[in-house]
Length: 454
Image (cartoon, rainbow, N blue to C red; front, side, top):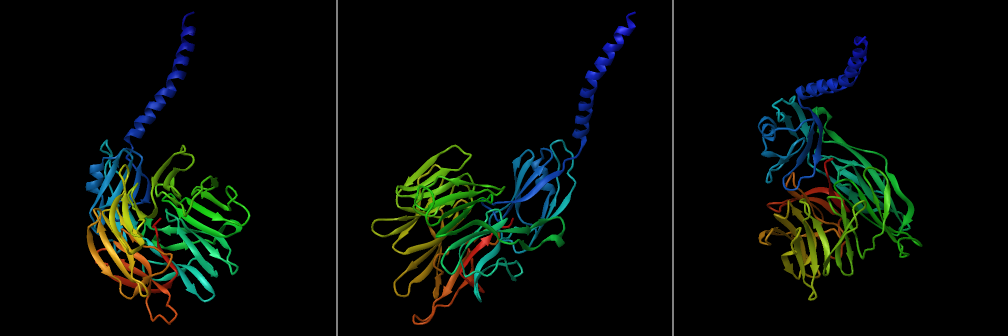
């Protein structure tokens, strides 16, 4: 009579215990599986020439990755981070002149080996330029082999250009014959990190996409490393607070939102992506972006943002003094701005490497026939090298940008000619960041900037 009572209890125990047993068996099976690579993408390098971000299925032994992985050419590198997410960064001071081959291998913390895999990686940026052509201007790109390709239709003018910080596209403003601005985004597909060398190839451009159907009176664009885009614009008869200006943030993942920001000049997204630098009458302020909680930090004084440094929180500021002198300052988290240079010359452009270990400044001095000088400074403001760029001038409204992978600068420079003649168009010019020697690319340009490798 008691045996039948035990059978339901046994069945119930089996029913309750079997799922737990299966989970334990599954966990044991997963524990015995070797690690595998889940994701490998280009990452912004804060100090060295280039970096890769890797994510694995298991916490990895960083020392084994360092010893088992290899680069060809044999460049100095190191792995940073812990657990499943690690960063491969190339040591500063090296120049990349060709694509790299990465043999990725190592063990996880249990000692199980990662299946070795070969990757082909080209982290070098490309030259992006607005080029004068018959009928107007066109956006063009220079590939690593020196060839130029068109990325856009021919428009009367392209006064505003901003590559997205993740390399996924380019934002620009074209200008029609009546002077109205029209905003576009051109999506780009880059093939800079592939398993087969045959898949490394040129950039592919999609058709331009209109960002705003309205004709605008002006537009300023700014992007961060995430690929977000800040559009600061105005159109007749509308805008934020009735003054015709407005700001809108376009997210890289899709969608956009209006920002209740008021500025006295161009706003710039912080490279890390969580804040925006806003110029105002009281100075420069750093304001958080949604969904971050509202926060505001203000640096008083008559200052302009000149350039961001690759390392987080570092930037170069241009300060205007009452006696008409200018100074270049390096700002770092938690510290007051440090003066690097001061003088009566006009500081028209600057660029920064790492956290400010090396800085470059373009100065204009003189009247009638001004002379352009390029300074290389260290983080204390000591002059490392001075180069007079005799016979050249900077294309108005353009800047200076740095490529850490090739240790070179890029600028739009125009040769000076006789005063009574029509000035020749500017050229895209590469500048060796160490010797400050010029290498003109023999391409007429209105603007020029680096397109990050995506």
